[in-house]
Structures are given as C-alpha cells and as structure tokens.
Image (cartoon, rainbow, N blue to C red; front, side, top):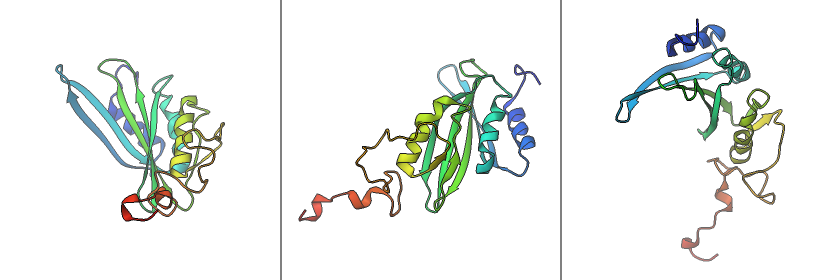
Length: 178
C-alpha cells in the first residue's frame, strides 16, 4: 500500500489489525468547508492505555514525521479521558487528515507513558495534563511546573471537577463576609 493511495479506511483498518480487541469506538468523519468545499477527514478511536505508545509508533508506518497537535484532557467523573490529536500528510492539500487517539484513565490511578521519546513536541501537552488534571506521565523527561505557580498546592488540579479540583481555593465574595 503506497501512501499516495492510502485511504482513511485503510489507516483505520491497519490500526484494527495491529491492535485487535484493543481498539474501540472507531469512526471516520468527513466534513466539507470553505468556498472550495474542501473535505476534512477525522479518524477517531479509543485504545487501551497500555497500547498508546505502540499506536503512536504505528503512525510512523504511514508517514516519516506524523504531526502532533495537542493532547486534550477531560474529567469525566470516574475517569480522565486524554485525546491525542495528530495529523497525517500535514500540509498536503486534499490528503491531510486528523487522527485522534483516545485513552481513558481511572481517576484513582491516572497514569500513562510519555510519548516524548517518539514525539518530542508532546512535552508541553504532557506537562499541562500533569498540572491541570493530575495525570502522572510516566517517563516524562522534564517533570517541572509550567502552567501553575510553584506555590500552588500540589494536590489541587484546576481542570478537575472533584475534591481535588480548585473549588476549595475559590472565594465567593457575593456570599457575604470574607
């Protein structure tokens, strides 16, 4: 299969064959936009956390330098969801597509391996997830605070919606005496 003829369906199928039983909720979204009605293609799937790094390595079978955009993260109650956003064939008009790999971490042990050894540019996103969501990135090469002050409480995570979130630090002045 040459990269010139590879389809989004081929890419998704390749991941499903490489990681049987570990890929869930796969989908391909096609949308058009702009005056030229350019098609934008988005591939989405969940993968077991233990296979995340291998899935990122698999991206290199489609392109020498897959483009990492960002990792988004969400507190979903009992779990934390991380979505790793990549694009393949970046900058190639008519071929570029986004590929979004999701992992779900239990809140009582939100740990995932770093991908910075494969994608060095992921460092800042990984640091952000540690500080804002309390995710532990195993093997992160630079484990320092970037987004919150050094004197910010270590057990408070601004994006969490539970007892480890920022609610205990917030003063509601409209409620009366301070």
